[in-house]
Image (cartoon, rainbow, N blue to C red):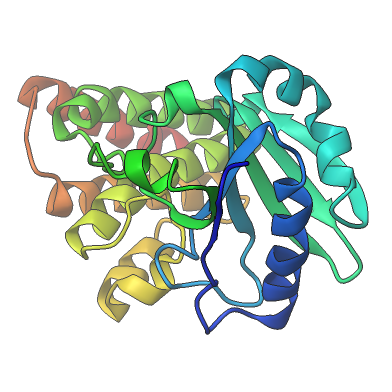
Length: 270
């Protein structure tokens, strides 16, 4: 029989999260196809609080992986009062099972990973339990780096996105415009600002904790109301903020043409 290695969770966990881990790990351990359980996300960053979810990684013996994937809903139901679950194709991660347990309500993400794919990761999670040292010996063999903003990739797209958003404002599709400005905030401004602050560049996640009040003020200026002129102003604020934080410049003629187009839309709204 394989030896089992247990690792205590760190001490500043909310009680609800600690209780879940202490209940979940023994029940997962009882399945011989499961070789270990680890935790990442806010726990790994030591930023977990009562509002956080838990990101659990469940490592599977490769020869049983497909069977476990098929049974994963029934596996997590054995852990506690599961209210609902669904898989993570919408975030590009079909291995993920997103769950809500309760009461008390607790969001848990289970990522089921074959040991053959242990190197496919964006972070090195903390091992909670493993059979022998099978996880610890492999999970840190390769360096994990959370995806970083690609300045050239962003620059090539940003001004086309700005123009597209302006066309929505000009046509009067204000809901579309509000959504498009939000897209720029989540996918461009937030990641760049967080990276510059030394934080994980994950959209706008916990940005209030990591950036200065001046940066937050400038971000708030990109929040429009349901009004065409306000959307246009928020779009201009978005472009100006991007100009002040971007790491590379690209097609200057494109930028000028898009700026001219914003003036056209402004004249149209006058």
